[in-house]
Image (tube, rainbow, N blue to C red; front, top):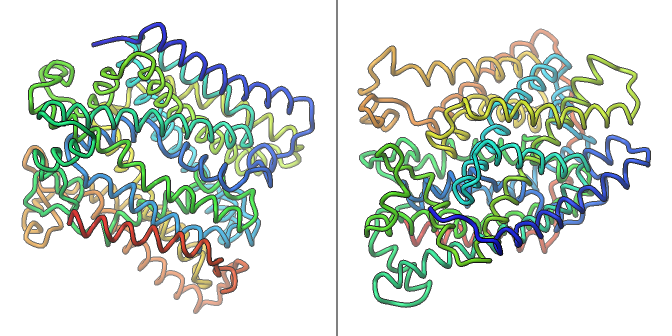
Length: 555
């Protein structure tokens, strides 16, 4: 496999100096001032709408998209883009209904919301839960997949890449949310330019191989040579139905994945919690438009790599121990870029990884400092002490990620790994958030049931095929054979079942407790909060129209 040329390293070095230098400048400039937690963790009032939108995307798009989702494009096709396109619709819902509740009630962390709406027990349990999830699943997977990609492209030792990315991310994260927010604007610009360059090259390569010229001809040839890779909704008889189970991507578990991720996730909502409502909504709308573009950057190259592989290209590069590894599709394509442009694409991928790691570690630091350290270890902690605790947390969690990452088996499928294991907790979390927002009678014990009961049921349904034969459920689409022929429930359907179970359980428990005189804590919510300005409404309608058009064309 090719390696980077000297000019590629120069391009990357210029990028590194620009981003890291800016991060260090902000860090040392702030170091002499008395920072407070809202400034450090939320950059309160200082992020513009375009900085919020860019930061949302930079923090979201990382190696699991570039590597994992391109790999799923290679294996599954365009259907995997449902995660991206439905996320755009989800962002609109979050902007209209979720963000006003957070801002009106001065919510800065997700555990704080749970404490304010339910009680301290629910808040503390979930704070610990989130910290474990963010460190063990999210932070480690981003670091591992990022180092894997960088190593594959540059031929630098994997461990060296992992240490380098971790240190680079710490430089950015130590500057606080303001540094992360504004450096993310540069990161997004670089990753979009580099990503589009890779897509252009892949489509052009396809068109040239079949004797034509141009990216649009290449796109047409992809559809011609791989028609099943453009199926948006899988039938249960299709090989990969278990990953994307039919209509569940439109009316089922996919919504739980997205609404929980974009609306109940400290890592994401933190970008908007320091702004006023109009700025936050405009930033989220901007992120939704960028989200519509992402499948072009991360999915189409994977489909192109599949077509080229079928035509005899990359026969050795795509193999590991004689087995085709879909997650190698994107690194293989990057190695085809010309000198200089390859350095830009390399910087784009690194930008995505670093931005996500910095944002994730900042969110971990926020939850630990405000919801664990201050509440349990040092209730009288000053603002500076809390900020310093956050900085130490950033360094410690990154070290933990470096230690844990190589041992999680992430290489078996990056993007699906993250979605499935996050799915063990997201149905219960989303259930207690959605009822906490919009049903005043939901009680604390009901929320605890959703948290613990939802996780327990997820585990039971995951391992149910080892205890029982689920083949009778095949006729109604709730169980399908996996790669080794054992019938199991697709994880998106599993999430839908667990979510309905949690909602029903919360309803029953809350009604019983209400009858015994339990009065739940409420939030300040009124209908006027959900009104939107005409420009936002116009943008939302445009995105909805694009989504309808896409699914109408590729149904």
